[in-house]
Amino acid sequence: MNATIAPVELSAADRCDRCGARAYIRVVLPGGADLLFCAHHGRTHEPALRERAVHFQDETGQLTGTPGTAPDGER
Ligand SMILES: [Zn+2]
Image 1 (tube, helix red, strand yellow):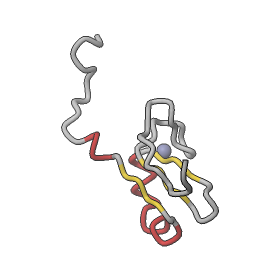
Image 2 (image 1 turned 120 degrees about the vertical axis):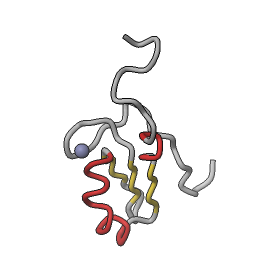
Image 3 (image 1 turned 180 degrees about the horizontal axis):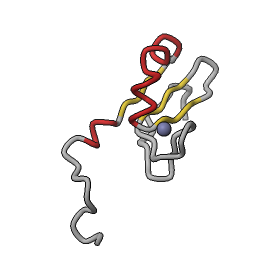
Image 4 (image 1 turned 30 degrees about the horizontal axis):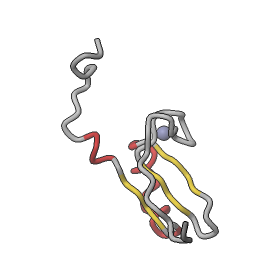
């Protein structure tokens, strides 16, 4: 183990602190506290968050090309 902030991949268990939707953005603040945001709230607060955060993890790219309907095999 080391002290660097490892990028932890966000999973379906990670929820937006604001609305409870699935989180795609993780922000680590000085001191190590982290915040989770869905794509919507992450974008809304991004400018302010980037100013303060020591680490800004954006996984909204995962949403690109994702169909709005359930994926194959998950009907
Ligand atoms: Zn949200």
